[in-house]
Amino acid sequence: MATTPRGTGARSRPTKSTAAPVRPQRADARRNAASILDAAVRCLVRDPDASIGDIAQAAGVGRVTLYGHFSTRADLVEAALTRTVQQADVILGSVDTTGDPRDALSRLVAASWQIVDQFRSVLRAAQRELPPEQIRGRHDQIMKRAEGIIDRGQRAGVFRDDIPKNWLLTTAFSLMHAAADDCTAGRLDTGDAARVLTATLLAAFTPPGTPVPLATA
Image 1 (cartoon, rainbow, N blue to C red):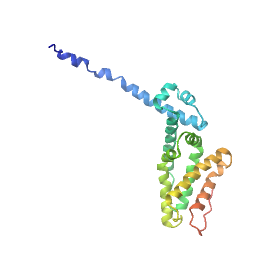
Image 2: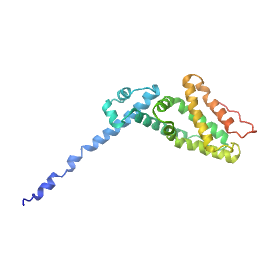
Image 3: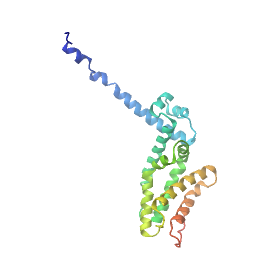
Image 4: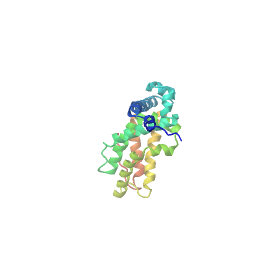
C-alpha cells in the first residue's frame, strides 16, 4: 500500500501568513456596518420613507454591501431604532429621578420628549416596519426608569394604586408616541408637547379626590 510522505500533510495546512489577511476584512466589515447604521439614522430622521438605495448612498457603500449586513429594510430600521434608544438611555441617565415622584416624572417626561421629538421620524419608520411589541421591547431600559418613579409614587400615595403599575407605564409609553404622531400631523404644538404630556399623566396618575399638581413647561 502506498504511503503519504510525512511532509505532505504539514504543507497542506493553512499557515499564519495565509490567515492574516482576514483580519483587515473583518475590521472593514465592522466599519461598513457602523457607517450604514449611522447613515440609516440620519436618513430616517430626515425621511421615514428613506429607501435602501438612499441609505446605501449616504453610507458610501453599494446595495449589495448593505444587504450583506442587513438582509431587509426592516432589519435596518430595527437596528436604527435600537441605536437611537441606546443613545436616549445614556442621555436620560443624567435626569434627576429622585425626590418627589411627581417632580421626577415631570423631569423625565420633559427630557424624554426632547429625544422623541428629535427622532420621531425614526419611530415612524419603525411603526411601519415592526410590530408594536417589538418596538416596545426596545424601550425596556428606558421604561424601567419610569417604572421606578411610578413604583415610588404608589408607595408614597401620590400616584394611584387602584390601577396596576404596568397599566400606568403603558399609559405613559402610549401617550408619548401619540404626542409624536400628533406633532407630526400638526395637531399638537411641538413646543407645548412636554407640558401637555406631563399634565395628562399627572391627571391620570393622581389618586381620585386628590388635587392634581400643575404641570409647568
